[in-house]
Structures are given as structure tokens and as C-alpha cells.
Image (cartoon, rainbow, N blue to C red):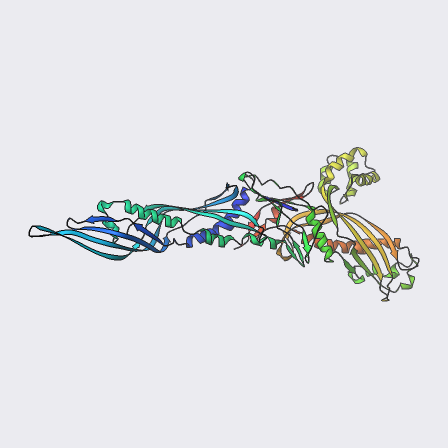
Length: 561
């Protein structure tokens, strides 16, 4: 199952790298110090004309290393593959800098030669050991650190993660700056092989700084905040774990991922017979400034409807003083037309709105007579025909036959039906409601008199947008355009009462109050996955209803200071 699918393009990858990875990695790199290192040096000899000194077992210990003037910068991120695994390589070059070490050299020495005693040479040989402390400050012309990361879903922890696969350092030595007091300065003829050896060893020490461990610790928790973005509170939680389609990296030029979606309420999981498996969007093109494209199925809306239904958030009780005109819920208002409830004419009524089942949605062609549609049609129809059509402004239809029926009733010429239909039609998400509407007479007896109706209501989702929902979640929000409702009298425990004439109370009592409940549902909205510190660019997001999903093309902004 995957009720949401997401594709991130190159622009989005660069944004994520710059906003979430580079600043933190740069701060870390500047604080890292090179590790200590022991450098063994081969034996060598030098002389002063009389004595020959041989240096054996020379070891140079570099301790307390630091980098001076090291100032890395972010260069870029490159997507690629290593051993059939998708990787992202971030490069952090730096210009010239120095290293600083405590240099401790220890060695054995042999002093050999001969002395002239009355024309006879007498050889001698002295030995000893020595330790010397110096300051070592080699210079480097540059260092490029590459951090290679993967984007994965950890099935053990059920969390999205960015993991460090490897790090590489590539330092370039400029001047080894062997300490002037070091025994290495005694190399015969200034032989540079020892300098090169020490320089290479020092460069390796710089290259082998442990970048991976602290960087891994630094970024390990970045994406673990994504599951929390599906928590609407009040026991309603969306599942943002990995969907059936997994994670794909098409042509090493973007990311595609499937997300399960669907909700649970107090631990119980929403389910339908055929959970969706949405296709992946294409990652936005390299030239596209949008960060991502997301597909959201109607399963997500149905899950929200179900969770609100289970929580009782789509039920309510209406009392007379909840209405602009309390008389609408007074029995006396109706007894002139309905003699059956006359014994209760001094009593008030309560209206109970309760759903029989959670609202359900379906994608289909709809027809909406909006101001924009009328503006388009004004130049396509004769004035008399257009004027008749304006009577339908604000009407919404889920079938072409119902639209044509209204146009026929207005006397619009059938010649213009196709013109109107083409202008008004669009793919929509249609919502069906099954409501129990009960009027209860408040005589406070064991069995209170009641009048029961069933309401079948149909709406179209409208005004889709991204915004802030409950608990600071980021959600796909919407409103409802009513298409029609049909009220049917079911039964009453008042003898001889035919409550058909009271069905009008739905329009005066039920409709407005149920609209309020739906408004709260739409304002809550369907949560969409995002990690802490990021916020969708709400005002510029582009949402459109397609054949089997809502398409969202959006940018994100970085919110953390």
C-alpha cells in the first residue's frame, strides 16, 4: 500500500543538502582535529669530517594536533551509484591552512670514528638514546572532504534516515616545515626523502581524520521527525512509513518514494477492501525551481473522514438557543400543520446529527458554475442565453444530466449545452454522506418522543490548499461545496405522525450545523509528511485534482534559526 508518493528533483536535493546538511557539517569540520600519529623513519647517517653519527630506531610521535586557518566551504552535492547503491556525495573544499602538532622524536644514536695517537688511529664507538620535543607546523595548500550519504528507510526503527556511508579527505601538502631542531635536519646533503616521508605521513593523518563518526551522530536524527508530522492529536495518527514502491533513484537524477499513509484512531487502523498503490510522480526537471511533487490519494481523505467519525467529531446535538431563531426547534411552530405532536406543543426539541458511517470520496467528473466559468462563457453565448445561465451561479453538479435538467428548466437552448459543459467540467473529488437526523422532544420521560430522518448528502471538495493543521502539523486542507441533499422521513414513536413535512428542519437546523463540523474537518486537513524545521511554501503550492489523486507541486522553506 502507498497512499502518498513523493518525487524530489535536483533543486530539492540541493536545498535539503544546503539547509540541513552543509551548515551543520561545516561547523563540525571546523572543530575537528587530526589524530595523533607515529611515524617511523629508516636509519640514516651523517658526519662532520671526523665523526660519523648513525641514527637508528627513529620514531616521531605527533600529538595534540589542530588545524590553523582551516576554513572549508560547501561546493555541491552529486547523486550517483556505488556498488548498485544510490549515494549522494557532498564536497567541502578548503584553501591553504596549517596544522600544528607537538613533535616528540626518540632515537638511538651511534657516534663512531677514530683518534690519532702518535700516528696510530684508534677507533672508538659511543652509543646512546635521545628524546627531543619540538613544535611541528606543516603547511597545506588545500583539503577537500567528501561526505557520502545514503537516503534510506530503516525497517528496524521504522524511520527515514540519512546515513553516512563513507567520508574521504584529500589534503595537498605545501611545505613540510620539519622543525629546525629535529635530528632530521642532519640528513646528508639535505636529502628530501625523509621530508617527503614525514610529509606524506602527516598528509595521511589529515586525510584520516575521523569525519564519519561525528557526522553520522550529527545528522542521524534529521529525518526521524517525519513520523511525528502525521500526528493530528486526539488519537489520530497517520502512518508515514515506507510504502510498497520503496525508494527509487531514477537515472541518478532525483528521488521517488512511496509512503503508506492511512490513519489510526486510538490504535485502531483505518482499512478499506482495496488500499491504493499510487504511481510515482516524475521528479521535477533539473530546470524546475520546485523542490518536490506529491500525489495524495482519496484514501487519505477517507482515512481522515473515518478518524473524525470514530472520534464522534461529525456528530452534534443542537438546542434551540444554538440557533438564530430558537422557534425552529419549538414544537408549537409546527402543530398547526401537524396535529399529532399537539400534546407536546409547550416543549422544545433537540436535533441530533449522527452519521451512520464515515463519509466516502470518489474521483469523477464534476460541473461547477463558478464566476470564472461564467466569465469564460460570457463571450461564447448570446446575451439572452448567458443571462439565463447566470441563475445557476454557485451550483455544483456530479452528473451532466442534472446540469442539463436545470438548463432545460431555465429554457436555455440545447445548442449551448456542450459549450457550458466543457467550460464547467473538471475532475473532482465527490464526498458522500449518510446521516441520521433525529428530532427529540424534551419532555424528559423515559421514552422521549422522536422523529427520525435519513439524509443523503453529496459534496465536492473545493479550495484545496496547504496550511497548518492541529498540533502544528502541515496538512492538505479543503472545504465542501454542497451539490445536493435528500431528506427521507424514516419513523417516529409519536402515534399517527407522518414527519415528511418536518424534513424542512434539516435545511434550517441540520445543514448549517453539519457544515460547521465539515469546516473543522477540512481545516484540520490531511497531514502530509515533512520533517521538523521545514515548512511548505503554502502560498505558492499548486494543488490540482487528477484522475485518481491530488497532485501537489511545492517548495519548502527552512524555519529553524
